[in-house]
Length: 217
Image 1 (tube, rainbow, N blue to C red):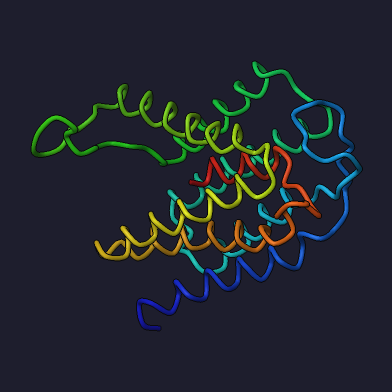
Image 2: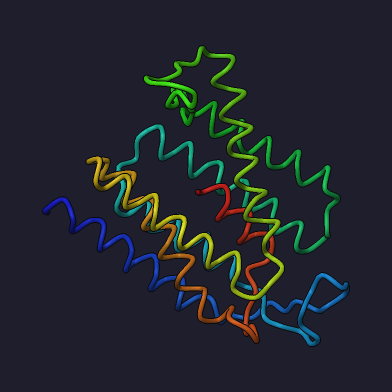
């Protein structure tokens, strides 16, 4: 296949699975002032996003250590989010779950070893200890960034879609086609759910969706 064909296929596959699964019903009953809806709303979007991401990645992307590590962390993050949707964990318990998920991904090969020098030319190369700290903080921070904006209809899914598209474009123009494909998988999953989440929302992603999207990004 030509280098652009897997990108298109990944986006369409992820989008199609997400569109198909998102309307399935597990309801969210409004119980606090943070929710803007006043009646029970289907909340199955997290499962739809998780399945569309993992199935597409396992089908299209190579099963190397980075992919296995990422999918392992995403799977643990989905489990934490799904349990939180059911039992409403405290912030501390959710944070522990995020850190454990990030640690699993790191242990399986997902790590940040170098970043561009933010105060000059060149790059900063990290040793093992600093790499571990930076990787875990970064994953947890982005996971929470998406999770915290999941209060208004369409906001988290919309931001994740735009962010994934932007990173996919940057990766593509620099020849990082596997990374671009992974990002288009994320954008397809989020965009497939988005029509059901526009105000007034017909479905919610729950923490199982917002945590997965943040972790995947």
